[in-house]
Image (cartoon, rainbow, N blue to C red; front, side, top):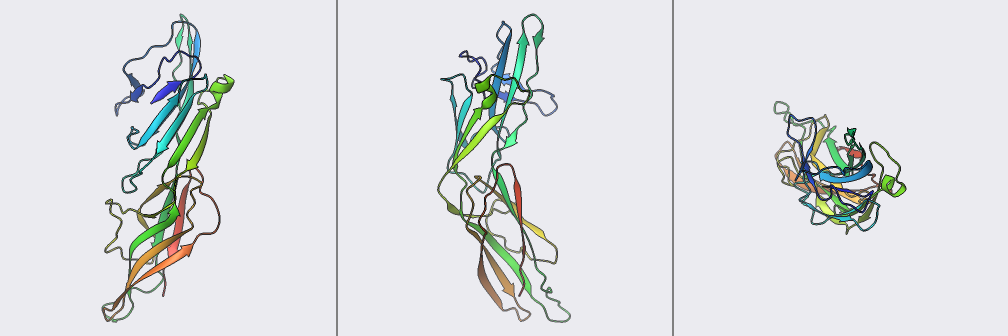
Length: 259
């Protein structure tokens, strides 16, 4: 969805832009037209990867010349997440000479947390009847944040300085921390049969979290099966060092489970 903020006149506000798979440009629904006079219009856009904002509430502030959007992410379904993104751009129209295409580079508003796991313990050998098998059942981020409010302000609109791709001030207000199980590729949060090898394997799809909603720790639940088929299940909690997760960055935690 896009709203302009250069003039009190709302030419493109609340317009849903879509693009066919083989198209080179986006079109608005319903059709919108530039003002007839010579003009520069600034744009602010919000989307989710997949082309919609159905998991968020977006409110545009049209009371001042500054473009501003408040995006509320609430009740985030961590088994079916979309990557929240935003962009800004400027387009010029010169009376009698046409208009510029509006170029907008979208930026990621969330941080992406991923886990890769392996074991340096020898795997069970049927012939030698020794070794063991380690299966990871779940990984849970403790006291992390997936909900919050994102405030976007198009600074170029406030200064009225033309910039092709736009500059947006993006700030998060974090929601309440919760314990979140990392979803598997099939959308579940358990991993029966996720057997560790000597090579790192990516566990699930990771989690999109609110920046600065830094978790205090994560807990791994895993089962160790010995050569006599004795199986024991353990929880191991790792306390994360103090820090922050930054917007638009992807983080990997590499874990080696041994005896």
